[in-house]
Image (cartoon, rainbow, N blue to C red; front, side):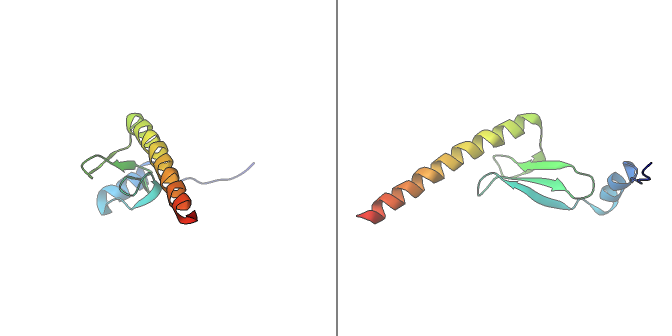
Length: 88
């Protein structure tokens, strides 16, 4: 039998409420939109259209996924255009 000890769930939340969250970028959607996760309590945030941090809900996950897909296609087309122009 394994003896694994886990921190109670309230300790990270209490730490964050006293000292504040320690957010790290977990996903770069575009140059301006990123997803963040707190290192301690695992709270997830993202940036909205005004650049403010808001909670990452399922709605915003879907929006970010679509935005990332469109952004990546745009960047691929831009790179293809640069490559085709450099051949001439």
